[in-house]
Image (cartoon, rainbow, N blue to C red; front, side, top):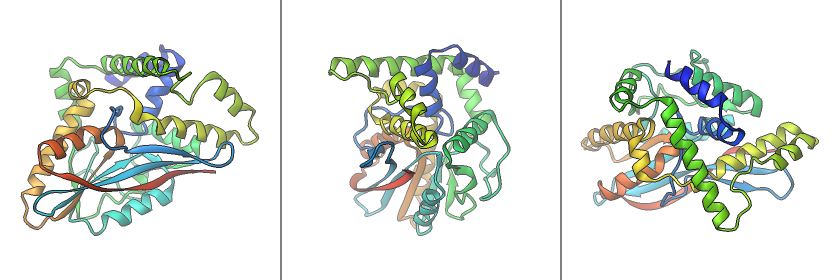
Length: 301
């Protein structure tokens, strides 16, 4: 019922809010937005020619006083196969990889096998086909021995949302307000529009020689600006899909750090979750930032 309400609300919103929600689906296993972060976790780098550029996600490294290394590995959930292969290679030497997935802990996707369709995965797969990219759950090796589930189960998610009297409609309203605040801030700063998805840009894409490349460029540009959305910690904590899922990850992190054999580990979550996770590991667990690298998720063309 919640998903039906969410889809109904989506159908009744204006064009830009609907596009916002569609883009959010790329960054989290459930919808989410990034707040203004200390670190940058996603960006778009324009190319030299029209309709060219790279959408990139970050791996940000931290270290505590004992020398343990913790990486926040930001993910976009539809991307090119080479991106997911690079992540698989990166995870191999890690002692532990804490991953997000609203599922039972023993229900792991199998690489190369299309997982059962849910309303959310159907949308993500549809977007992947449209943009000529691949779906994360079909390429990341979740069966690796160092992978540890660090998320809520579907029942836990539903229970927490019910206790808060939270619905997908109320979540949508909060996200729409965030988008409006971002636009108002942009106008106050003298910017014409913070969004890459304007009527003019869509018309230009329709007129492009390669429409697929043009629309992929616009979507990548929009995703690359998500770190600029004005999403405050208080709102993040109030939303189950962000705050409570981050708390689930941090609880598993505490248990994992208690193991003496774990010296190098990663939290592999959607980019929308990273600002809150970064605040927790630096403010509460004593980790300090030591470095950052970027991976190309989409290369256009």
